[in-house]
Length: 242
Image (cartoon, rainbow, N blue to C red):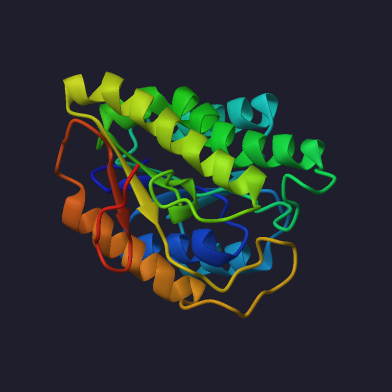
């Protein structure tokens, strides 16, 4: 099916950065496997019509073992290689509760399961086609996961999840770099987003601008293999402290 075309898998493609990454890679000629939680997504359907044979969309809940297994099996039924895996799916969760407040620990667990563990689930089940292909995993992280830059007094779920994602990425990187594999961690910047369920117009970048910056940094750094994953700001290319 894929012939000599580049192949990519992206999670969290319902809208925002994930959807814009799908658009970017389709325009670059990739065959794209897109995973999101919205059934009959109009934007995805329009892209499938615009790029016939290039876009393969399926339901994907990265917080569910069963859903990830089904999605991975769907991909492996179509191709035995992935040139690029982008783990983008994430949720923000509650952001105002400090240690002095009544903390919603169920919310923290939910954010952690999707935002941190979700990327490990998908990487785990797609590692064979990744290593058969481009050997590149890109995880959309955040400056919020940087302990060296920590300044917030709340955002427990999101900050802890992104820090855990960084550690999980490092563990994967340690294993696959021996065979030429690598993991990149990209902070997209402050983006106008739907991450809290409704559109938030506050932010420096539109999702389209953020996705463009991400693709630019992937192209710039994709061939570098370092001892630790590259952890950078997508807009500036500046490295972030762990």
